[in-house]
Length: 149
Image 1: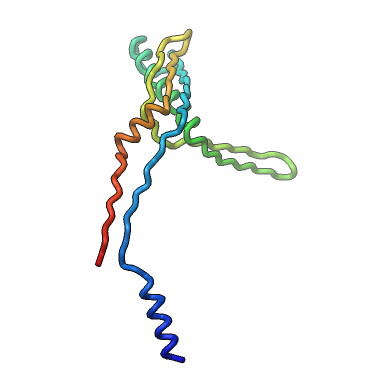
Image 2 (image 1 turned 180 degrees about the vertical axis):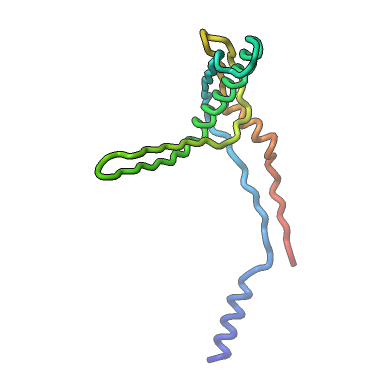
C-alpha cells in the first residue's frame, strides 16, 4: 500500500515539467480613439504680480494648470471624501474634499486667450496620439521560448 502511494506521488510529480515558457501579451489597438477637451480659467486681477504683463503671464500658467486638472478629472475621475456632523438633529458641519491624481501625456493647447477679466486655455487630448506615445514608450517584446533540460 505504501509502495503504491509513493509510486503515485512520483508519477504526479513527474508530470510537472521543468520546462518553462515565457510569453508576453501583445496589446491590440482599439477601433476608434476619442478626443476630449478641457477649458481652464484664471482671473487676471488677482494674480500676485506687480505689473499687468506679469499678471497676464501668471494667469496664462494658472489657466493651463486648471485645464490639465480638468483633463485629469475626465481621464482618471475624482476622489471624493465627505463628512457631516449632526448634533441635536441639526447640521453642525459638512465637509467635502475632492482630489485628482494622474499623468496626462500628449495633450496640446488648442487656444489660449484673454476673455474679459479672465485668461482662458483650451486643451485637447487625442487618444490616438496617447496610443502612439504608449507604443513608443512600451515597445512590445517578441516571444522568446526558453527550454530547460
